[in-house]
Length: 563
Image 1 (cartoon, rainbow, N blue to C red):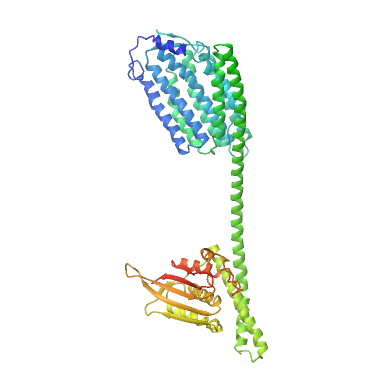
Image 2: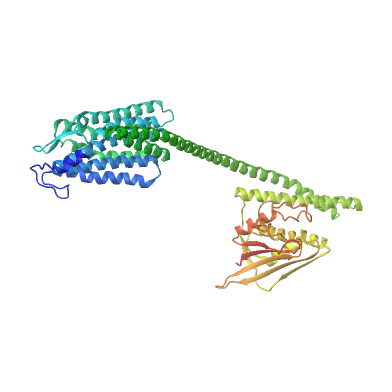
């Protein structure tokens, strides 16, 4: 701090004119402005762009740090070119020496994270920090800048600036080269092209930056450094193009390690400026205590990150298992569709022959034989309905249910269904069945066979689950509040077993039945209403049920737009 204060208390003006706004002076060659100001802005916004694409991605943050360090160096260099004050030039020059290795560190960190697809180890971070630490400690000393020449308006560089800083940068550069070659040789899965492209961009970036500085520092002709600066945005763009090919990472462990390392360096630096023996003892104790607690903190965070990674792996495994189950479910649906389709033909034949025998087409028979054939007929009819339900469900799940829409009279279709269900209706001696329809037009656009199945399913359900009482079927035409259109409402109302409130939300799901349904009808599959709902929705209609509870009857309503 005394060194910096001495700078500002002894300005040491050069013979050059005073710059405007620290940046603009007549002595600065135009080439410097072209190589500095636009490149500072371009490089910064390139890094900011990739950061904003995914602020949580570790490679994006590292690349932004790289561009930020480079932009800061170029901006400070702009002040160095324009200033005529020795204190400002030496202060800016010191900051440049401090910032310059950060460009190489960021580049090394970036390529390691991108290629390995994980954060670098703590040992690597410690080695990087230890190599850089002497520059941090010695930058405000004469070992870095030994003096200022008012004649040339340049600082006199010490061994740190002339040799150690460039040695550190060369060390990081060779590290990048060795790492890249090793990973290219080790790569066996076809990712060599990405590694070569990435490492080439980073090495070219650093070489163009460093060669100009080394030549200029040795010759004291700083115009050479401008050539490398012109190429920097090109290679930054090249790196940004490359980075999108690599996966991003969690920064939590990195941030913890960086915090511990940075704080440890700050505490340890106090040992170089002791004011007393007690100060050395207290600083040493604090330093050791902080290191021990820091190690435990890093390990704790590392365990948490590893657990999170395991959870992510489990989530990936579950996703794969879910995909496999989805595929198996599809195969199951295909098998059910095939099996039920094959069962349908023999069942239809059995049902047909049983019907012919009952009707006397194949000769007369006694009552015991008639009763047996009648049971065969009813069982085959029940099994045919079950097979049809499974076949329709498999078609729905596979997305192969086809609809042929025609204009049809819903009133006539309901009457046709009631006619087919007449044997079932007549068999319910204790149930009063009725059908009513207001005079009017009941033309709709629907698939006759599919919608006929819906109507039959709903009416037959009410008959099955109404031991005694009534089943009322009705048709109603409801005019829309606005416009000439209308809605056709089909409703079946009964006073049967009813539906419990907890069953109502899942009534139209697969295999869902009311709690008291099995006591009345043991042959139900719980698929009829599921199929009915899908068919109605495919016709852009609505279907729902209403009930006040168990034992209080129910109503099933289907609405379809009038044609």
